[in-house]
Image (cartoon, rainbow over all chains, first blue to last red; front, side, top):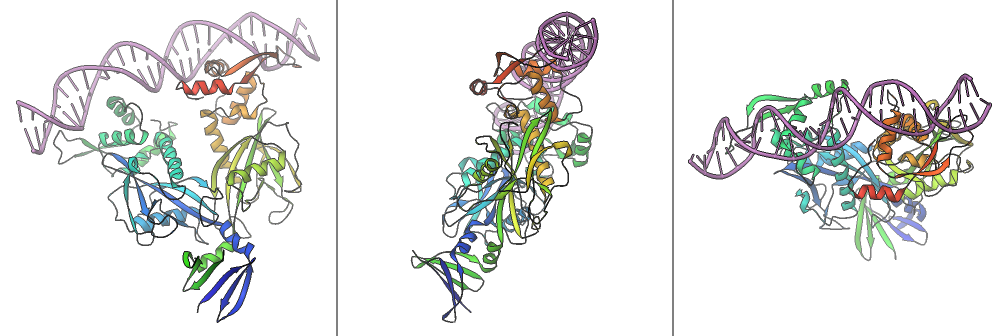
Length: 256
Length: 256
DNA sequence: TCAAAAGTGTTCTTATTACACCCATGG
DNA sequence: CCATGGGTGTAATAAGAACACTTTTGA
């Protein structure tokens, strides 16, 4: 059965089987726009020595064809965090990744079709551990180098800025970097990650960086070496979460 | 302009200017009518050497009679920050105070009457510069010592925890303390504030605290002295925002 | 044998901590 | 004259910054 409705005067009249079946006050319809809420997820990955983010290309108006952050309306019986996790999982198939709420954007006119407030999240994924499935979201989806991202749909540039700022702060005070690397990594890869994320005027000093991160005692050296590189192969390390907890319990704090 | 919409399958397709402009899931239409968003504001004040917060006592169900954070639904044409400012102004008459968004709480069952997500803010006010007007909110409103706050309505304890945590972090890296003090204050008052907010196992060292805060160069000594105290009167200082900007421009950061 | 990144200590400089006595005022 | 908090400097320690050469590998 089809039901049509027409917005007329201050009423929305629903029409089924060729006659009006019920109507609602426009203001209630308007409240629909008032109270729509969504999540948007800035998905960070680290690839080719650079920070990347996963964007979708919008398949429908508004902003059709523009690149945007993956996001969706929050379902009626869904917690906010769950909605953000769902967006990520539908797009990448990944579960249990690092996810953090950053800020809520609710300017009256941020969405051209009505009042939609959106809760921004960022997540950290290991690039290459997943295949991207844009189907339910958009006409396409792919990784973009952060340095090449510009002119996103809606207020998504502002959202991205907030998330990036948060990441830059948080990465210095919590062991987030490891979420972006494979389970085993070289110290140079780790340093490159920090250099890239922090984007400081001067790069970190190799010796000081190694001294500091190793002195914290939660990186464990494996007996494996890097392979297939045209230079002296580096030792592979991994992040030991249990040792990190001990480190915290002894009253130390991660600070880079 | 008329907008038509057609309910088809499980979608509601909105039609403007003879073509579809957007569509939504039917079930979402229903949820929109039942959902709302609000702001809650943790209003911090500093009084009698202690951090205080301004609470209202609920005048209506649910949680009638319980203490709660002041908050309200966001109006249809109101930005989120504006709603938080309005809540504060209606309660205290204050405008232009420090206000910061902290986190959004959206658990499905956090509100017994329906789906309400709430955006938590904190603000910092100078106690005594205002009179409290609970009228439009609740049966009463008053300051509570933070140490005596317990068992608030809704998930407001959790919201308070988040805001307090944020304040503790932020107060060390931005000159927020001054927002809680009168324009002229003694260094001991300032230190007492930091001791109280940070709640460290050891109090700050008086000489080291003074050395550090004065060395930043944005506190200006006035020629006035404390009055009416039964001991050597302290010099009054004030925070110079222009000098603080200079301090930042020279590449320094506030860090306590 | 060359290119390319891995790996490694020491010195200097700066920031942080710890600590105790005299001073000015009101009651 | 006493109680109360105001005000002050220095020495020891710890943390951070700067810096250059040898090693191992694949091509």
